[in-house]
Image 1 (cartoon, rainbow, N blue to C red):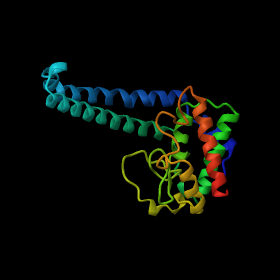
Image 2: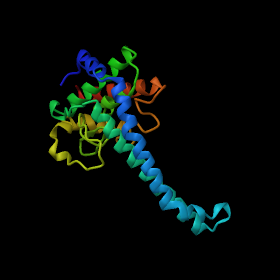
Image 3: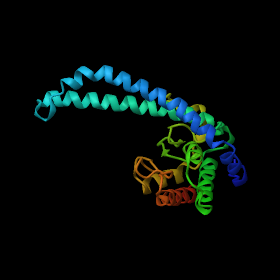
Length: 223
């Protein structure tokens, strides 16, 4: 599937901002209130008995574990909320529209170049498509997946695992070029991290750097 700027622009402007905002408010507020009440009830005795800075090492370690568990619950809730917001965009699953991973990578590169050349603001609309279509990890077995660890073009934002063997479209054909690129960028196959996401607000340099990296990957793959 080739990137079409006119089609993308139409998709990005078809969702009503008021509808999206109302949906976010309707789904987010009740969930956060419910989460806060659960957290307060679950941790009220522990919070009251916190050892503070003078507690023993064992008590402090247990407290850190509790805090980590709480953070994990909050992160999962944020993912669920984002899944609902994404549904408002009516994002279609286009993973089968790509013949192979090379084609999906070229699509992602053209998408990024369009964003840069036209100075498109990366709002919630754009973010949803970038998260679906941009490569995040180059797996050692030749699979290329998005930020959700799903095949490129896959819209599933849940934590469910996906069997990559069911999606031959997410696999690289030119494994030699693929291996060469991974050697040149020894970061366990990651094209960016959470501090340098191409959709990072207010930092266009992250998107530029990511686009350059995609261009290098395309060159190695001989696309």
